[in-house]
Length: 518
Image 1 (tube, helix red, strand yellow):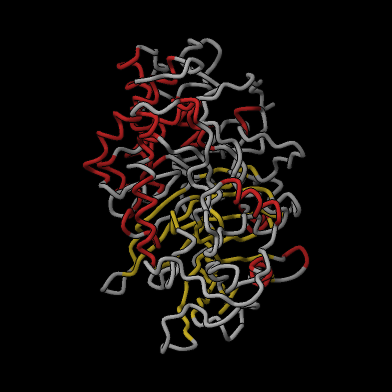
Image 2 (image 1 turned 60 degrees about the horizontal axis):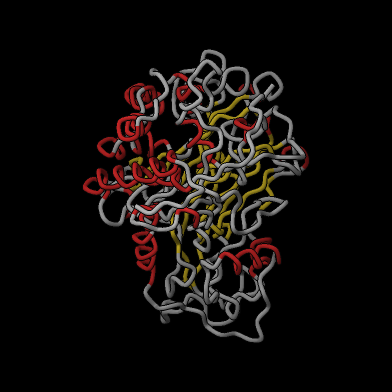
């Protein structure tokens, strides 16, 4: 293998380890099982993107600090020019965001989205038959509506009924002002201190990383790291901004500020019953911690039964492989530091009293919003960041890489075992996030001639709004339909199990940081 002179022996070791893990996982994942965060991470869900939760975010809203913003994404690797059908939520699914506010691994509050298809005419193949300037535009032939239900103590309350989902961005001619459509799709529920905001629609995939494992493995220049290989792919998102007291135990966010968050997808079977097919709280757990044989089991599991997966956390595979192949000492087991990250929360930060260990994204809602967020979150001393919740700009891949190699262990550990500088060189998303709800970047457009060109995406993000076209021109891409997702997915690799080890070969070494979260 050719190596770049500035790349360390550790970098090469982890890159090759990524190849070993990729080869080991091929049989179980299958040829289309590309993954990033939780994109197509398990065998059964890989072929069902409408039900595949990709990422979950939970953070204190920077512009409404008495609220929490919850975001969950589906439909990974959505190619912008995916016409004529483009991308829709499944109508036989229940999309859930669940909240545990007392640490017992049971959902105390659930927010549930369900969707319905609507056609103005079934006598055309067109998604839209003219320029769409409002969500109620007659030219929008196909659209979805959604219902949002809150479930608390077994009682259901409909919060939003028959609201239109913001459609896929067909392109400049079809949707000349897409930002206006998004604004129309943001719904207010209630008033005053009880006001919620809801959104459902398409967004640019907010997860960012360099996934070029195989090019690097087979002789690519290791100095080429730093390109966001998810640039220009879209997802379908739901977002909800909720007053903190509505999430807290006893509706008392001051005394009970810690919550756990996760998302599930339930799919209706032929017998009419719903079955959980996807689950996600903490990013990377089902990709890197859980082996292939148990990935589908994890997706269908209940957090209260997470003890069955404990050994995968306390005795992780990745550090052992690195040690066996390249003689880098792995942190000593059991890895209780990873138990805190993935299962219980960090003591003194976001660990509930009497917590039952379970995989959730834990958030201390009382942590002040910082004016100077650090992409490495708590690892870099920014207590508001991941793993204390997850903001859109948190670099969870770099944080997870460093945690797996022992960066959260005490100073008595061998410094070779923990490296707080591991990273893939992609520090920010290719598209700017918004400064108001729902905060997500605008989706890549179906009319973009090079949607995965980061320079183009950065220009679009900086503009903050869609370009205005000179007239309506239909934008239907290559006509390949929703199956066009498969090509980029396959090209991106065989799984985040390989990615997690391999991207470390694209290591970037910035100045060391102090890791105090006091």
